[in-house]
Image 1 (cartoon, rainbow, N blue to C red):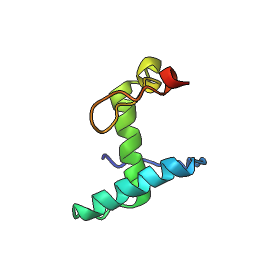
Image 2: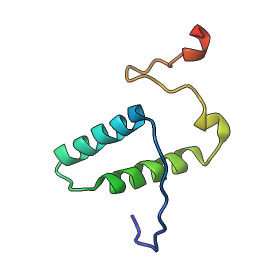
Image 3: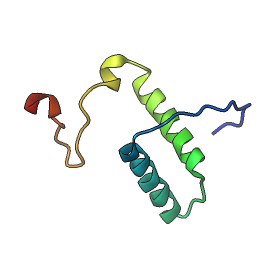
Length: 77
């Protein structure tokens, strides 16, 4: 990532999301990269913004499960 001036940005996250970030950090470390949690969050946030271009329908679309099937929580509610 290109180095540029930074600004502090803090927020609270649900434990389940923090757990997912921590798993990602462990995966990155297992691959041999020595990135901080903040580095990984920046990479994930940048990727999400690039992938969705902040289009609401992409941001709130049901997430795909690991096996490729859509998570259909709305249908079961």
